[in-house]
Amino acid sequence: MTHGLESNQEPTHIFYGGTFDPPHEGHALVVRLCLEKFSSAVVAVVPAFAPAGAYGQHKVVKTSFADRVTLCELAFADEIALGRVVVDTVEEDLPAPNYSWKTLEVLGQKYSGSRFALLLGFDQLQSLDGWQNADDLVRQYDIVAIDRPGFAALTEIEEQFASRFGLLAAGRCLYILGGDGEVSSAQSRVIRADPEGAEAKEWLKPKVIEYIREQKLYGDK
Image 1: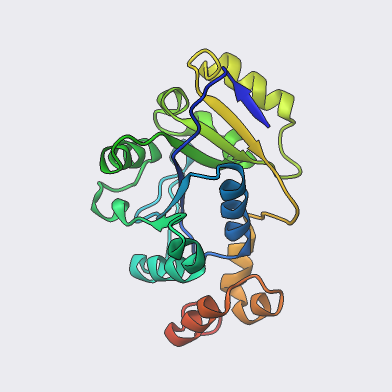
Image 2 (image 1 turned 135 degrees about the vertical axis):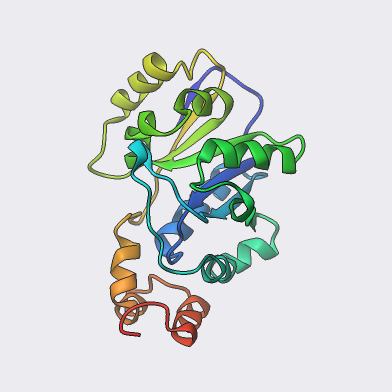
């Protein structure tokens, strides 16, 4: 579902930022939804080096940046081989904490001629007004939102973007994607507590769980 002014341009790149601590089936589902919707786009998976949060609530990540980059490379190996996903370490060299507007600014320079979209869950969409430079984000980039049960209705989201941020008037698009399966922000916490249980639920790719075991990253170390 697409909302916004008519445009012949779809995103060439989709910015998917996060801690990816670790990358799991929920993340893979989100990437699949994007690749199916935008047949020519590349998803830039960007692990956060020093993640910022809405309203100044910065996140703390205990797993090393290098490990999370490797986990992403393992989790999205098939899509990387097809040229549909890149794992970009751009935030390692940016001032901490990492804000999405700055990361997107640098990525836009790195991938010349690109049209970037910002990928969000509905929970993040609801808190977007607490992000640094939120107005500029929605005016300069398309938004790809992943529908999650229990969050704001689509009509509320439309009103938020039309009146608060002026997205529609700016000629940018809001894409709403949804599909089978659960995309849960709680999955990472569950996996960190019990990676073996997550393997039984098939939440992790085999090479990801293998790396977790080898490096003793989660659970009882």
